[in-house]
Image (cartoon, rainbow, N blue to C red; front, top):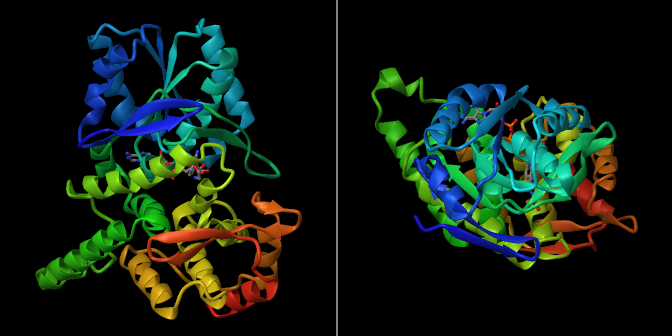
Length: 381
Ligand code: NAD
Ligand code: GLY
């Protein structure tokens, strides 16, 4: 599959998506003229599965590489861990011409990306995403950063990578729940900008349901859990590339999130509120975004932007991919409303909503009355 091309004021680079593309790393680094040392950052789970073989492969190609594994999970997106990375990089004699390789999910990409953006005022960065979410979202577009006790992603920098290599074969080991969480972002990209991708996802969901119905009774119960998106197939690489293209196209017109890029926040305003209200870690990000997308589609309907059929169609696809769409029991609407007002997208007290205007299109709106948000929440139990 042909590489996609990011072209922004902050940097231009290829995004390569497909099975086995990690093996191209040595030759692609040479092609980029990167002759300095390589600093491979991953997390504990990823290091063992992919970091060690990659390190061996880079060494075999005659490249100098050191590696560092942080603990897996969101808690590593912390200034204390950035500081440990600085100790490792500076203590090891990092130079401007060197390259940080971020191998892992969005946590590693954001964390190692931020260290690369700031050490020596910036060294080269290559993103090597190994989760679906990182492939279609965080490894493209140059947002890097860590969390602050007062909120997620509040400390960071834009630092475009020199290259993103998304090896879809790495997804084979991703836990099904993490994979499904990534599909939420794929569906989000389809809704905001690519109706054709949405139809491809619907067709994939139908195919999987048919396969499931034809399965022997003995395996049927095992497959009773939503199977779409919970397993991996080579066919999906084309879907992933198409979803990545949405991100690339958006970033190419709005690197710094002054307009179009805000559309990527579809489902995230109420999604973040639900994620925070549930207590971080209890819902996966993509699960919260799926609930947020359903709530925000209802909001768009109440605001006259989409019809009931669109809301139902999006909900059916999210659920076919095993994603939740209902607000969890016991969550208070007023708390969710208060949390949306703390959102980063609030300007002059008004929430800037990224709302769908159909399947394949979206717009930023700051004219949504609070009463409609309440109504959207009330009807989503
Ligand atoms: P993650 O990085 O925590 O990865 C999820 C889990 O999967 C981890 O336990 C990890 O060890 C494991 N894992 C990763 N790859 C694996 C593989 N191939 N096989 C088996 N296990 C594997 O989470 P994530 O969902 O990838 O990323 C979430 C983070 O991304 C959040 O911090 C979010 O803020 C950030 N994010 C950033 C951007 C951006 O533009 N920079 C966009 C979206 C999300
Ligand atoms: N994940 C949202 C963005 O990159 O803008």
